[in-house]
Amino acid sequence: MVFVQSANDGDCGGTFDFRSCVEPDANLSDIGYDIKQNYPNPFNARTTITYQVPNAGNVRLDIYDILGRKVRTLVDGFNLIGPHQVSWDALNDNGGTVSTGIYFYRLVGNGYAETKRMTLVK
Image 1 (cartoon, one colour):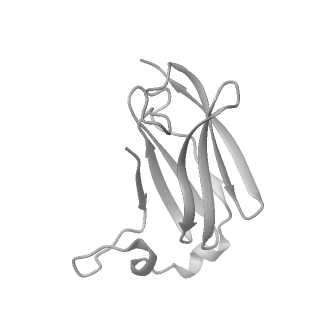
Image 2 (cartoon, helix red, strand yellow):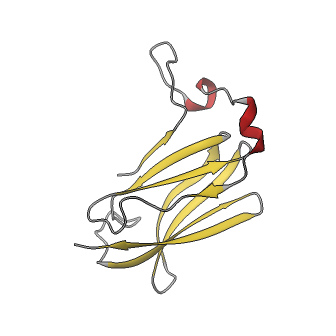
């Protein structure tokens, strides 16, 4: 299971739709794309990845194994401006458990791409 949330979560009158609820802060226009180191790292059953988006638009965040094979797509779609978090439960796209080892996560959006390394231990 993958959990995605905006770090700007707020009260939307009892229902939550991140596309209509979050209003961008004027200062957020100065940020660029950014992806932080996952935490915890190394991790066992679950890790969190935090990233920032400078403009609303499509973003993709994939997990790759040490051989460069795509293991899981965590984000593939529209994101609002600002910080976001996604959690990876060490499962692949088919719901199977992945092996202990080194993995890479790659954020791609509007000409930006950055990859970071993480370690899964069991």
